[in-house]
Amino acid sequence: MSERYPSIKALMQIKDVTRADAKQIRAVMACPTLGVGPTRMQQIDSILRTCGVERIERGHGRKSPAIVYCNAGDTYAVTVLRVRTPDGWRFRVGCWGDIVERGNYE
Image 1: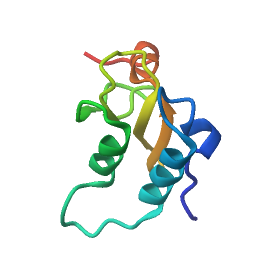
Image 2 (image 1 turned 60 degrees about the vertical axis):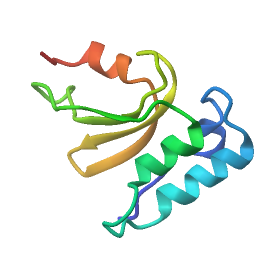
Image 3 (image 1 turned 180 degrees about the vertical axis):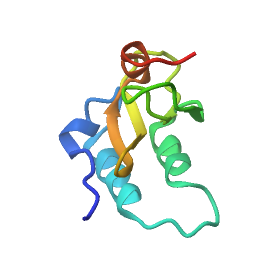
Image 4 (image 1 turned 180 degrees about the horizontal axis):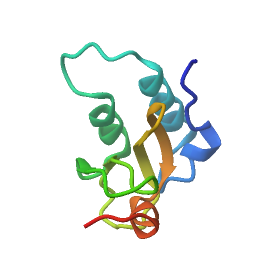
């Protein structure tokens, strides 16, 4: 099964993201990782001009996945996330605060 990525329109929901930025982010998401150099999330962080890539470890239960996100400086700022699902890691657009609120994290 091929991975689905957020749409250009969804990526443009992120503050200050232009259509060109969104297309560039989609290209990074679709590029296979080679294991050398910056990760895809680090490349996306550079395009978004955010404050680095952060990780939240998995909590307890199904509604508490591990999350890697581009730090936009606000818990509820819309940004690019990679969320661990039962099927593997998925790119999403959203805010990590909403996920943590619904989950069981300590």
